[in-house]
Length: 85
Ligand SMILES: [Ca+2]
Image (cartoon, rainbow, N blue to C red; front, top):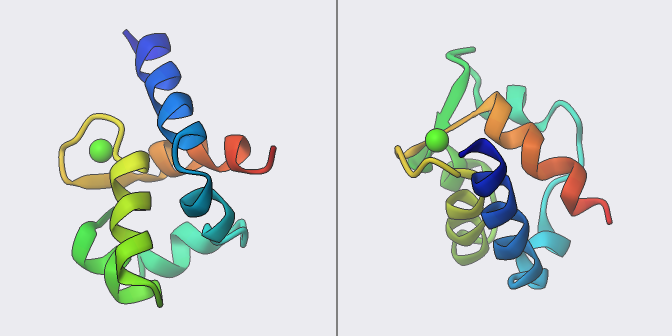
């Protein structure tokens, strides 16, 4: 199931090159957004941290691979290496 989810994330990224190119590359980005250190960021927090709301919305949905409305550090880091290609 995890492999299928990862594949779906990769396909979603390939289909959204604009969002990928705009993604923040700072390796500490997650911790900056998750200012309270909860281990996840909500859509509201992500939108507050990103200048382009439309792109931020798209990126959040790509990263939130289990669609629970939160991006965990694990989800964030799964997407990040793919973005570098
Ligand atoms: Ca999630």
